[in-house]
Length: 368
Image 1 (cartoon, rainbow, N blue to C red):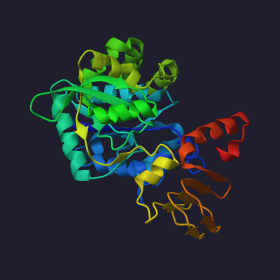
Image 2 (image 1 turned 90 degrees about the horizontal axis):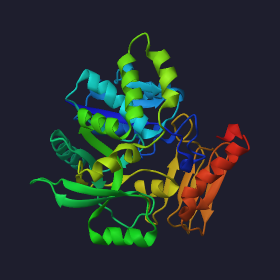
Image 3 (image 1 turned 135 degrees about the vertical axis):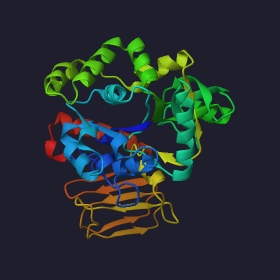
């Protein structure tokens, strides 16, 4: 049986002031439809993982909103973490709980805030990843790069595995400088790391125990108490002590060194909507590659208008009732919220997090 695990955490600081702590990006409809990114992720995996085999890991602040957006997912499948301990703790908790339910299960982990095109091709790639995982390998889906992107991590692939599309992963690479990213793309051996993982739970937990024994011990003890009267006490005692580390650093890089990681190359459209620049890439623009997103706080379109004149490759997001007009601008981001107006060059879109950090230092909580 296949289980889908969807980590839904973080506040999406690079999408401020649209994404806030109380309404993070995975709860927002940023797909060009009424679906939130979270709802689109669940729908995407639904042909292989029904509601009973879908788990969402989220924070206490967002648990109610997640349950409201996903009424078909059982309440007990929404795993609430008391505080953020990064992706390894979130994914590891779900893996440990699933292992107690189904020790032979194959699970996939899919971030709640990605945009994927071509559903048919996605399912084909996922099917190949599941088949590869059943043979005992840990699979990281690799997106065929379309350009030398510096904002993504990369996977370096090696020899093919069997007669299928899977290839051995030689190593994980961090976000490169532009010149190195060009070499990666030109070599044909590198793929974007989409943070989509598929593995047998016993294989993953075995590697977690080998590489992160303290984290493994804490998660398995929490999982053993899950759903019992002791759950809250055990969670409160152990969760703050868990190592705060990503699953890539904690498990996947070390597993790749042992030859345990494979990739299934994926050629479907993929975007992690990490900032307003990538949001502009993910959505369909007009003839001048401008993208306009009008969405009110209640999910309905605001009354305000957007007028673009002599404007190219500009992203405009508005939740206000004001008229927004651009004239003679290129490669710009304009975000008009009821309480904040943000304007920047698309080339500096990732620096929004520094603005958020400055506001946090000033304790400007109403804007966060």
